[in-house]
Length: 240
Image 1 (tube, one colour):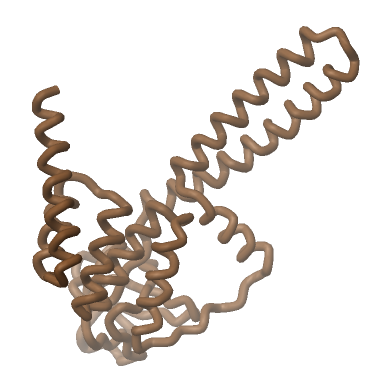
Image 2 (cartoon, rainbow, N blue to C red):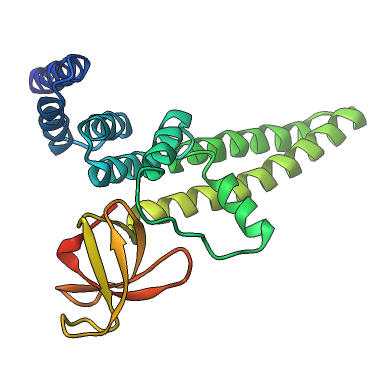
């Protein structure tokens, strides 16, 4: 317990120092301290503050990377979402995503309303409500209350199933980490995993890509939101 309290105290002190450095516009110092905090455990709030420090220092690639990591952990946070969208407007590449069916877009937006943990808690609440409703149905004598119990049980069970699906989707995003951010100021995407491959197109720092082939050590196949595909050196991108 003493070690735990000491660790929490040191973490709180480091965060206070980082916040103070950011408030005084010592952004490089704040970046160092926030990164030190992340070594002891990831946190959406620390990633968000780190993104703010990078943004203020003019490093858009690391700012977007930090905001994306914070958004991955807390997709429902409006401040994280707003700052991420603002940072994206500072990038050079303006990529128009491929069109998709409206219900797919709606489903993605619905899943991103909450994090995996929040959806998981919603599942627990719905399942508890289902159990209580089933007990009301079996043990109450009045027909009206039994009908209410049955209806609530069905609705809560359906919601629990949907919330479980949403939690699973968010958990998969956290585990798979298939997206990355271009960190190089200018990057030529190749047709093959070789420096002698044909030049396909050029990307710039801060652009978000999806890793579609992760089997090679030094090269990764990427895909853009508009459907373009190519190969890039692994050192030019950083996984979210």
